[in-house]
Image (cartoon, rainbow, N blue to C red; front, side, top):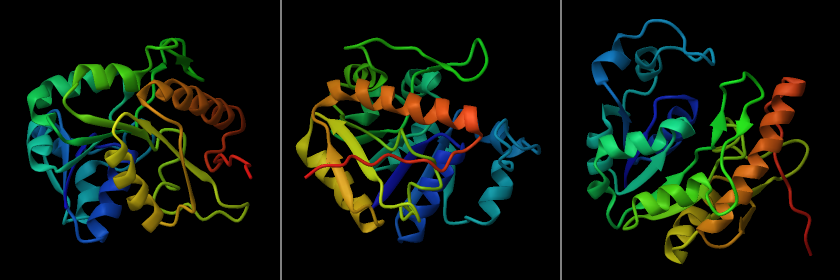
Length: 226
């Protein structure tokens, strides 16, 4: 399968590496290839420059946002939430038509420092905004309330977390469920249509606030059910 990922940060890199390790063709999209490859310092999260990471992940291609979306059969949005719609615009909204688009983003406002504030309201989640922005795409909200290192490797000493998702297209959600089940996720919880993205984004705020308060990012959620 061809995978297109928007965003060169830790989430995009982690998912790219996992998909590539399974034999998929992967391209990460960025605003400017030249600018991304010219960076020599770690990013704000302490991750090494992209060109250093790519030396260890040579199968992963780098292109523009447009390149990545045209390339991919499955698209993952892994940008900062506040620039996601702009990234989609730069990629060309028409290039998302009929494709499954996994939205991993969160609506965070860092203008007053950390922890960030929640920047959306009920019935106006970022996931819903994205689906409305690219109505011909099949948007699935997923991966937004777990750390990047847990995404491809969910097994924890403390137990098995749940993988949560939401979206309007049943076949798209089934596809993502099958992918993560192969990665070791034992429980996938479908919360419903894309309106439920609000609650997944709100759930992420618990994970984020806990992380900043205790400087811990290995927490994950488990829904206890019969």
